[in-house]
Image 1 (spheres, helix red, strand yellow):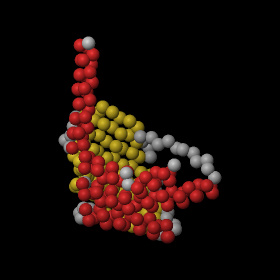
Image 2 (cartoon, helix red, strand yellow):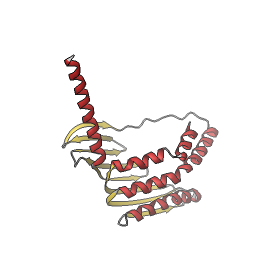
Image 3 (cartoon, rainbow, N blue to C red):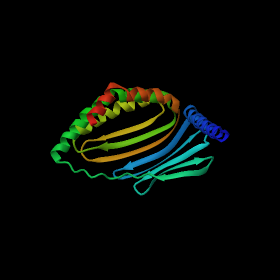
Image 4 (cartoon, rainbow, N blue to C red):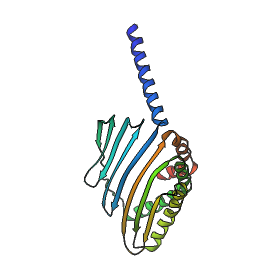
Length: 215
């Protein structure tokens, strides 16, 4: 009987340790810094993160040649995993595919308002030390390009209001298919502050309607 109590105590201590670690991760600020660049089909980025005053830290690296996630504990690498995306073949008819894309866009529009509210809530909780963003993008259809940037520009204004020192340069293109983006940022945030905004977003009626439309 004594060995059973010992096992139960060990399990209890282990659960308490896990819960304590999760709470510490949520309460202590997460720091994130890095750069990313996208030029057409070529991309590369590297982001470093740290939590618990850097005791837990890691790297997220991605490019067209290699992508991986590495976790370190006190500068000792304990985990590394490649990040791979599986290509899924689409075997639907063109007419059906067009209807699906149209329906998806209509459903996605429902998420714009709650998505903007989520973005505002998150930006109020994020402390930016550095934020530099350059985008030059567009497609050959001026109407579609105008619609895309009509959504992007309000997001930029939200960021500028929250972080006036942010350097953001957007250049719309209306005559050709092109995309170039560069991001250089450093920020910190307490993850526990994101719990309520995320719960509010994922339980909103707009998100539930979007999920139903995807089934």
